[in-house]
Image (cartoon, rainbow, N blue to C red; front, side, top):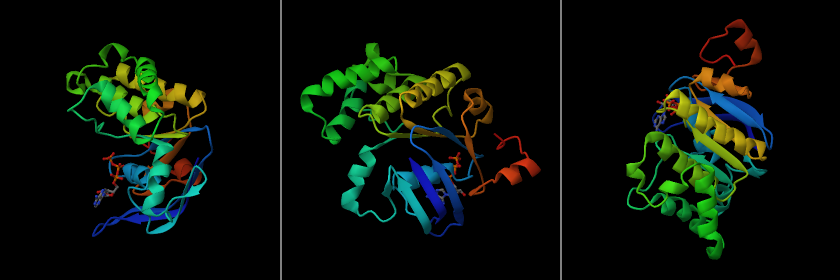
Length: 231
Ligand SMILES: Nc1ncnc2c1ncn2[C@@H]1O[C@H](COP(=O)(O)OP(=O)(O)OP(=O)(O)O)[C@@H](O)[C@H]1O
């Protein structure tokens, strides 16, 4: 689960990126975080996995208060969060298989089960046949699926994704979102940040509409139903 209470965030030397955000995503729900470029979507995700800390407010993830955690507590937090980055962040000096298996090694998964689990997840995302290739040889959509496999291989309770369909054509974007939807149906909490309202609407999950670092209230949406943020 995700709970933000009055969260504000300012980058050093920058303007306020988020202003008094309050929202709650209950366990097992699927939400979109919708907003234009610069609205603050990536910043929200960074606060969830504690790459950044809020200036004010509280962030509770899977029942743990994140902004008060010390360095030693972060690995346990991050083991429970699968993060799919906007630019994939794959390692291009090793195979698709090794990219995914590494996530299990880092989370101290039973070594005798790493090969089986990695192969199963790559099969799930449709890449079993390509698993010994270098990710550089894969298309954008395929690389995105490697990134998803890596994020979900140790079965985190929460999966967050930053513009996972940003560089993909419509068909591949739908396939990627279908993977997140399948995870959600298995009980995973999912938060997908996107500027693509029409794609989000196709799945019909609720949205958190973000504009200029603020969440729009239902009243604001009703009064000013801007096409790019109204869900
Ligand atoms: N490292 C940083 N230093 C200073 N300002 C930053 C930094 N990262 C983001 N910002 C600013 O914070 C605001 C929110 O940025 P953020 O990246 O969260 O938006 P976004 O909705 O994810 O945009 P995009 O869809 O383009 O990735 C923007 O005004 C941005 O310029």
